[in-house]
Image 1: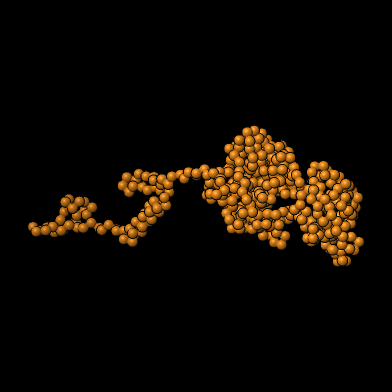
Image 2: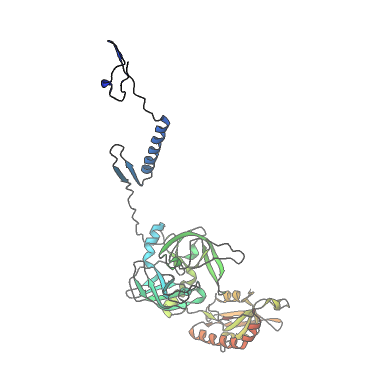
Length: 440
């Protein structure tokens, strides 16, 4: 008996046992079989990969098992076109429509500055944002914040299409942080102004601007968080503001804040970025000037170069310090100096008077007095209640107009007072005074 080579095909093997009825051949050693679990796992992975790629609607790659060729499939989701809607004040627009309808009217504002408003040394850097409020055949007017162009020469504005133009300053109003620029280009897209008083807390609002001076024409959205916020700016000016959680950063200043109808209802102006009581960063606290508060001022600047009818009393003043109040002196605004031939002098105000009320409404400090007088116009009369020589006296003053002439006179008065009081101010840090022409 001998054994055949089991590696040879069965028909070539020699039988071990021969018989007329059957033949027995030595069997080949069995091949190792893959476990069923392994098959299921492999199949499961394959299905998961292919299914995930197809179900995701993106691009997926699969290899043919036989030929090994690769096939690439891509979904055909298509591109959604944005309908360019008209801003009519009646139709609620989608965010996409608001951006498309107003992008052409928004600008970046830059200029040759050495130090920008955030304290960084820059040259030809973007200072902020602005927007076209009026455009005729040859001239266009752009509204922005006063602090964006304050101290800037060679102002330039640029549009989203890449075009840029030299701009001139028509006029500004630092107290309300607005400025109007002019460019000699006509027939430009314009924004539509809305009614900021009609806003409700919780309404959607949107901003277009140039955050950080580099991320140009960025679109952000949020809600009206609050109305009629009294915000004290870094220079001590108190302003009425809209509060929003719309993302606002350096470079957004001067840009438009839109309502859901695509109308401008505010001028992005400030962001609360830190707190004296906490080192934690502050987010979601942005502020905008209500457009209704400055609408007439903007028109006046465009027509006259300055805000007409703005009241001026003609005094320098300072808050009554706490030490004096502990000795019975009332809180209020102390008159430090009076402009010659001003309404204050003609009405009988005197140096040393402490103004405690305006038309019967108490004022506890200079900011409160300023805010009260701003509700009047030049030529109107106002009654000041003053504390003088231990008793209260009413003084009626006819308000002057705060124009370039009175401002120049007030600057001179301030300089003279500074020279007289410089030594005292160096000794008493709390004896800081304001140039208070009631025109901020």
